[in-house]
Every structure is written in C-alpha cells, then in structure tokens.
Amino acid sequence: MTRTAVPLRVDDLSPFAKTLRQALTQHEGVPTHVELLNLIARAAGFSNYQHLRADAGTAGRLVAAAAPTPPADLRQVEKAARYFDDGGVLQSWPARFNLQLLCLWVLWSRLPPDTSYTEREISDLLRDWHEFGDPALLRRAMFEAKLVDRTIDGRDYRRIEQAPPAELKPLLAHLAERLKAG
Image (cartoon, rainbow, N blue to C red; front, side, top):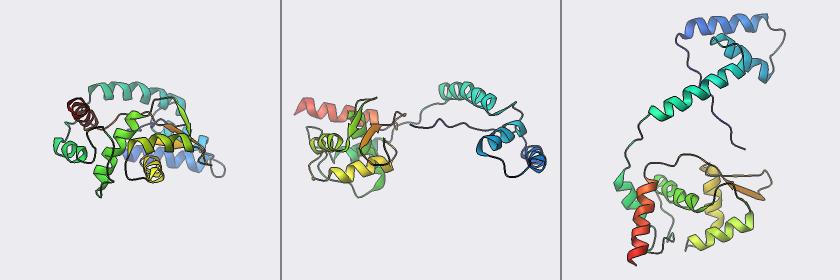
C-alpha cells in the first residue's frame, strides 16, 4: 500500500523549532511515532496530525491543479523510442538510467491498474514485452523505480498508481504511430 505524502510548510522555522523543543521537554520520555507527529503538527499551528493531513490534502489538490506540467523532453522520447521495435517490444536494455526509466514507464503503462500479479504472471507479461530475455531484471528495476510494489516475499506484484513523466505520453503516441505504420 502506498503512502500519501503530507507536506509541511512552516512560515518561520525559529518559532516552530522553539515550540517543538518546548513540547519535547515537557513530554515524559521519548514520544511514540504518533505522539511525535502530533507534536510536530501542533508546533506548525495545527490542532493535531489529522488536522495537518486534512489541510495538506486540500492544499495539495489546489497546488496540483495550479502547477503547470513541465514540457516533455522530445530528445529523450526519440532516444527511448529507438529501444523499441515497430511492434512496441523492448529490444535491448539502455545503458543510461534516464532512458531505462522511460522504457520502464512504457511497461508500467501496459499493466492494468488495480490488478495483482504473481511473480510468474508479471514475468510472463514482461517476457512478451521485451526481446533480451531477462524479465527478472525488468521486474526488479520496476520495483526499485517504485513503479510496482510487491509483498515482502515477492509473490504478489501490483502497479503503483502515480502521475507519469511528461515524456510518457509522446513516447506512447510515437510507438502507436510506428505500430500503425508497420
């Protein structure tokens, strides 16, 4: 299960630090995780951590709606597209990390959301989507890039829902065009 980030914005760090220090000195012993979250939230001017989360959720939606998306780097799109054949199959593993990541995003986009896969099932899908015969490499890379999550024992994989980079949409369009033309 993915966690939702809760941003904390403090207008003036000095009063925040003083208030937090005072609350910590008045607290008996080391505070628990939840107690510490509440102390931090109070020092920032909220009644408790839940109040901070609720405020961050509202502000986060407003900021996300107002923030412009950065333009796609079309040179990166072109470079990443070279690693796929006309059928959209990944032919080789790029040496550069940023191209590896963009290729992984293409594979991520092919995984249906809210679907759970066994290790064998996701490996079979990845085997169909690449030619160099190493689904374990792709599986691990997707996990390390936080594109998929897995259980501790590695038996259950699930796509992590998130906003893709700006380059994914033009790359997918480029690959779809090549598929139609071929």
